[in-house]
Image 1: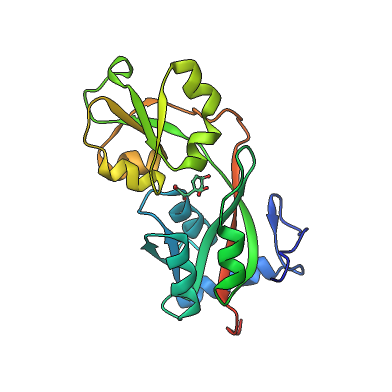
Image 2: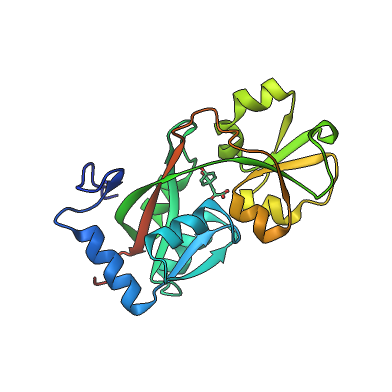
Length: 211
Ligand SMILES: O=C(O)C(=O)C[C@]1(C(=O)O)C=C[C@@H](O)C=C1
């Protein structure tokens, strides 16, 4: 696998140098590229896709593998995959998926990640017994959840967990956008243990794609 670039001109971003990142954004915006991300609207992958190009057509896929496969097959011109979180470390499996799927990394971007505790309307913190989210999201909030006495339950994605929430003794860890998308209330804001919490996303394209 080709190593991702290790430095770049933009704060928090890594690109291939010489303004390639800016060029990438301009090109993406002109053509309204289809950008695949994992999860559902309101996920951090969705937010990364929108940050990469506000006018892109962001398309959800169920798994990280499906994101890479959609890009390799040309169903989407770009994909976004989380590579590493500043607190929780490497996102398991993603480096292997990139290496084995016929895609290449165009650039990498740090997305600030704020994790909120979301519940059904009318539910109070005292009613909540467990918290559902992506394992990487649970890890980012491990100390705060322990202090609140809340057990974690794994889901495939933060926004998928928010969309599926139906129990009044459960809450989810997800974004403010997920709360708005699925009619949930924010019980507690900013549960991430590190105030500087951020996830690095790779922007991928098909290995043979030009531009
Ligand atoms: O669950 C999501 O919303 C995702 O986009 C996945 C994911 C991850 O796999 O690391 C991405 C960013 C956040 O750090 C938490 C979860």
